[in-house]
Structure formats: C-alpha cells, structure tokens
Image (tube, rainbow, N blue to C red; front, side):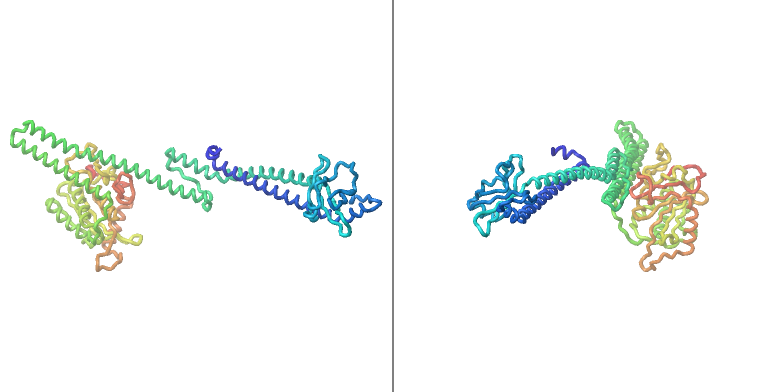
Length: 537
C-alpha cells in the first residue's frame, strides 16, 4: 500500500487526501449530530414523563380509568416499597410492557427520579424509557414509562439523511477537487513537459509564466532563470571545448614544423650528411631560427594563457601619447627605411591621451600593432601613429591610439577573423613573414582586459588602420572633465564618419572561439579593399 501511495501522482494524492478529510469530517459530524439528537429526544421524553406523571397517577387511582390518549401513551405502575408492581394501567396480557423486574428499593433511591432505559417483554420492541417517582403522602412509588420506538425511528431517519447526503457531498466535492486540482496543476504539467524536453537536449525551451504572482508563476520564473543560466553554461562549455580543441590543434600544428625542421637537421648532422663547414653553418642557422620561432610561439601562448587566467593588471596612470612616441622611436630603429610619424587624430599635432592601465601590457599592445604594420606592408611605405581623445559620447570619452598603414589592406573575407588565434588568410600557413598568428589575438585580449576595444578600419587612400580605445582618465593634476580639444573632436567626428558601417571591433561581443572577453570583428571594412591581397594579421 505504501509503495502504491508513493508511486501515485501528486494530483492523485491530493484528491485522495481531500476525499479522506471529507469522509472523516462527514463521519464525525454525523456521529455528533446523531448523538446530540438522541440526547435531545431522550431529554424530551424525560420531560414528558415528568409533566404527565400526576395525570397518569390519578388515572391509576381512579375507579374509572380515563380513556385519554395522552394517558394511554404511557405505561404506569404503582410499586411497593420493595419495587414490586402492585397495579399497572395495562393488563398483563399486553406483550409490550417494560420489564421492571430489576428494580429494588436501593436502586430506586439511587436513581432519584432520573430516567433510565429498560427492555421490553416483547422481543420485537425497542425498549422503554422509565422514570420512578416517590409519593409524598403515602408509601410506594410511581413508575412511568414511554416507548423508545419514536426516538429510534427518528434517529434512524436522521442517520440515513446525514450519511447519505454526506456521501453524495463527499463524492461531489471529490469530483470538484479532482477537476480543480487538475486545472491548477496544468502549469506544473507544462513545467514537466518542458523539463523533459530540456532533458532530451532542447536547452532553448522555456516555461510560459501565466500568473507571475502565484507560487507556480514564481516557480516558472525561477526555472526560466535557471534554464537561462544552464543554457549559457552549456554554451560556454561547448565554446570553451571547441576553443580548446582548436587551440591545441593550432598550437600543435605551429610547433610541429619547427620541431620537424630541428629534428631533420639534427639527423643529417648525426648521420654525417653535413660535411662542409658552410652546410653545417646553414643547418645550425636553420635550427637556431626555428628555435627562435618556437620560443616566440611559446612566449605568445604563455601570454594568452596568463590573460585567460584573468590576472588583474597593474593599473597606473598612462599616457598613450608617450607610448606612441616610444613605439615610433623603436620602429625607426628597426626599419630605418620607413617614415614613421606620430600625429593627432585629425592629422595635426598629437595631444595627450591619458588613461589607466598596465603600462607594460599596453606597450606590448602597441608593439604588436607596429610589428603587424611593418611585417605586412611594402618596404618604404609610411606608417602613422595617431593619438588623441575621442569626443564625449553617452557621457564619457575614450583615449584613442591608431596605427595607420598604407599597404594593400586586409581582404574583406579576412577582416572579420583577424583577431582569432592562429588565424591566417593563407590556408597553407605560409611562414615567409615569420608571424605566429597570435599577435592581434594578444592585442584584443589585452585591450579587453583594460575595458577597451580594438577596431579594424580602412585607411583613407588604401591600407588598414587598427585603433584601440581605452577609457579616458585624466592624469593627476588635470581637471576631471571630459572636454575634448577641437582638433581631437573633429578627428573623432571624422573617425566616426569613416566607420558608420560598424567596422570590426574586439571587446564588445562575438563568436565563442575568440579570446576570453574579446570579440573578433563582426563586419568587414567600410568598403572592399581593391589592392593586392595580403595575409591577415
């Protein structure tokens, strides 16, 4: 029974509990009603016996008994001092008379006029109610009795009415309870179906909230919130697994080539295939270059791993203008044949662009942008580093640094993927440029770590512009306002006008396989690049 009860549905259990409570309630109410009714009817008989005792006694003593119907309804007998019947108003030939044989003087004294039940001399009778009174002016007692048939019949009729109506009421209430509970449980049934669909793999399912203020409505809202968290968690886990598999595959691919090269030249040397000094020198040079490349790749991987760990940067006041000048100075030493200049956002003199961040990491960001520009543009082509403060937008402003080149630009198909790790436009992973495919991914990750964004735009006249935007934070001693010089505001307006087609930006949302907290570009430059295609950065 317990197993069957536990296996039953909640709806069935609730209806069963309601039925049981109704039955118990009707039963207790019926028993109490019948008991009170019986007590009231018996009290009424006792009162009638008291009221008619004198009349009945006079009738017994009378030489001519009265034929009054009220008198004839009662049995009356004169008892001696020992309780024996002396005379009665009914003859001994009548079968249905009360059996007074058990009365004695002691019992009569103990009763003291209180009514009591006695059996009948007729087996089919339902008994009598008797009261015994002491005569005040003579010896002996008067026993007066009334049949209990009317009382029992009334009680039987009351029982039938109460319990029949109770059963009908219980059945009707149970039916109403079943319909009501089923209707109220309809949202729970939908929750059950939704949970089953989610268990089957459909994480996009949600529960309809019909009555938000009810318990089921609040449960549905909480369940929907939980499902949203679960869906995001599964999506994040899937994206993380996909990203990790791709990362491991790309890293393995990148590391395999230098390792194979080093192993090949080592085996040639071990087998004595390198006899001439120039052959040995060439082999050692190749081994050294591949080792350097592999070391750079490992260093980039470690940088990305540290960024993914969300280590808090060492935040201090930084001026992007100073970093831009330093990067230009370093680039001139690396590429003396290039014209590298630092300008304002509008092409005029550079202005201070204060922010807060980790200076070493921001220097790495600018160095990667400069390396990218030098590596993928023709020799002798100029490069500009534009620095300034963007105009106030939505109550705040940004410090901006742009690296503008005048090379072949980036193909439209590649523009949306340049911030992905290990991405190269050349599917054969050509290494003539010597890059690892992680430079711009590191840039995007570091900029996002500083609550900034990196954008890819098209340089007017041809080429690519990579712009980083960081929160504008005045340096110590400067007024804490966001007023922007006119030349910077004009530059910002021009920049905004040049990017109305939403050029690619990292740090504001994107595919799950992008660096953590970084969003690869979502759109190509404002118009297709018409120059000769080059590998994406």
